[in-house]
Structures are given as C-alpha cells and as structure tokens.
Length: 125
Image (cartoon, rainbow, N blue to C red):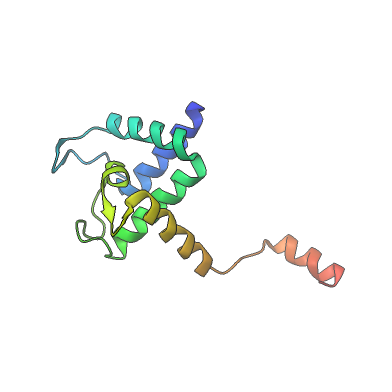
C-alpha cells in the first residue's frame, strides 16, 4: 500500500467527513484525533482497496446529508470510525455506504467531454 493512497483517502476524509475543517475533537466514545482515522484508513485500504474506500466515504457523506442516519444530523462532522463500527440494518455501514454511492452515481447523467462528442459526431455515431 502506497503512502500516496492514504494521503488521497485522508484528503477525502477531510473534505467529506470533517467538512473541510479539522477532525472532530471528541466523539461519544472519547477524544479523537486525525491519527486514529489514519490508522483506520490504512486498514480499510489494505482490505478493500482505495477505490472502494473512496466510494464508502462519499456514500457515508451522502447518507448523512440526506438525513438517512438516525445517529447523525446532516452536516455533522464524522470520523472513519463510523464506517467500521456502525450498522445500517443488517449490513455494515461500510457496505451500505458503498451501495449508497453506487446508486447515486447511477442516477447521475453521463457527461461526455466536448472533444469526445465532436469525434462521435464526425464518425456518425
């Protein structure tokens, strides 16, 4: 596992879960530091791979901001601990968050770059 993978994951954590600020100072379980999330990120990337962890982080933010989590209000700072300890029905939060992201992506229209559209028109597609 490359350190660059972890840097990209933690950048996404800061943007999506910390809402652009520092890590939440405390959680219900006690004090929390960004170092704790680095350790969780390392385990998650080793187990699932960077792409799947990205999906889960985005999905967790989507679930939180769409008010589908009973334990977190929209725009509440979160940590990666939520992906590893929380349950969503019968499934782990990691699994449900990935599903939420995939379903969200399926609803998004596919936007082709302008140059690709031009090439497709030229070949008659």
